[in-house]
Image 1 (cartoon, one colour):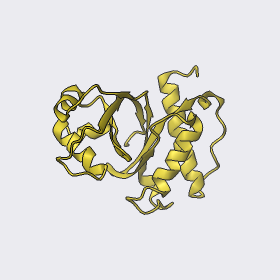
Image 2: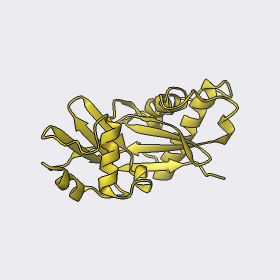
Image 3: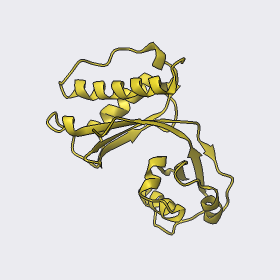
Image 4: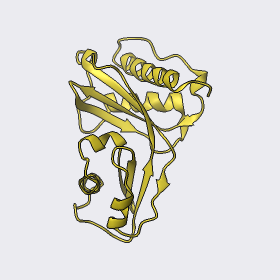
Length: 185
């Protein structure tokens, strides 16, 4: 991929928007883009008036970047279980954000205190694993939960665990993100 960061962001945002518009019968399907053929993992976040309206993504690069952003855009708009499927009437009020995930790295930590000491607020995306239970927060979530303890507590709850849960089976990984957001204008 020989795109600049800015070009990549522009293409990913346009592709996500085109996929949703096509699904809502508002436009053509996104055209193939050979520059997005490398594997990649993305999250697509949709907001309306600054409030979350859908967010779905991939943690591992298992398909071409172009296909991944399309699939996640459609899932965020139509299949996020927290929301009803998006309608064509609300689409003009929606802003799209695409996050491209970097490689996740497991923290070398045996306790919750060691995990908390290693988290980088505002920078790390975090994945919490406990057996089959897992949850992730993108780095953008630090804006709502700037304290590492609160961040980790909410992540455990998202994984279906209690706020004070900890076990020797817990593993935590962090990942970097490049993100692009449509203007809120």
